[in-house]
Length: 561
Image (cartoon, rainbow, N blue to C red; front, side, top):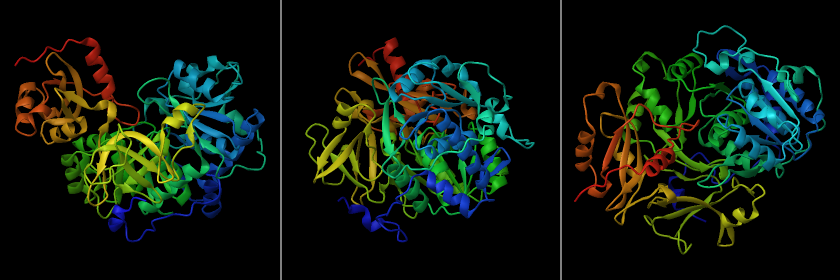
């Protein structure tokens, strides 16, 4: 068992947790019994109590069972963050089925794969997405689309800026197999006894990986319960906490940190359908939000708001997330404004959120953190698979713990390749390259596939990005590899400038500055200023999109000399 980090373990927390021997749905049932009239959800100033939430979950679960959903079946959940997402998620679990969260940016080809791969019978979706899924009614066992307009849950006037999707009025869609959520709830169906337990299938988030079709990560109620519970305890969340939900719920960090964790604790969570830095600041001020689970790019944008000083965000007690390393300059600005350290963590779809989190009392910048409750993490050599036991040795991060998935859905061969046995235990191979330091904190070097090999010199993009954020003109930066006649490949920086520097600084100015800040082989050979960088719905920089475009074009001129 890796234990080097125990010296810096939070003093008020145990090192191991006894997980509830219940389903995830039971958390909602218990919180609704304890706090029936307490606000569970705030949605653009509309408040929904735990009693109301549970009642709609029960009604929808009964309707799902009427549609033929049985224990262990998979149901697609295809919509933006909203109260309906929460209702749909817990209704599926109440019906003893498993949730398949689908990125709302996915379209027909991806949906066809999810439906065929999971043998889904039903999809619960946003009204604006019905056209992408209704054509599959009749394919295999797929027969029902339950749709809803987000505007139906904005039930009181608000001056908050509503996203376009939330402004759409509810419509009646006349198409085979399509039924509105209103009608489903009004049907008055009662579900049968809830029988799912900790070892039954709970959720199957899909992981795109680097090649091929997306793979479903099969999680039980036990594995999902583990990260929902440990995040609550690690961050000191209780029934009086108020959580801001800005990360998409289809993403495991948002799902666990801003929905499942809060429901376990019986606290309130404030949902945003789309990211808006001004609305976020207003919600923090208005609802005295105590914790915000996010991603680095959101914090960068939030702090770039020229009006941020006008808002009272002093209620915040915890800010953190993952997905990318937090640039030092941004972390310092955050600390100056709030007195809080950005607490970084590390996890994957295969681990349904974090296996590592920084201790709140002693975080390290640009660090994955330490292995959390009951997690054994190691570093292995990528080629020999032998364990590296000394601090600073770089290799692949592997993890063993209660949150590790059961395997890739219907892909036993790929599942087998993803695990390695060490000391008689099965460890998941993350595919991420990193190391641990003398104190047992883990650090990411990069994904195996993202490393840039410039004339034999290994360049890790996240390291270069972190260094470049020190430049006062850079608002966002993404480092990619591009073809190079002599080196094979070289470094390119895609940059979004801060508005005040636009037209006042050149690409060569950035390159010259880099020469004084980093080793020569890390200095970008090329710099391109962009209006924006491509991002996933979770806010992650889509570096591969930029890199693939660069290699496809093959137009970069080879450096001379």
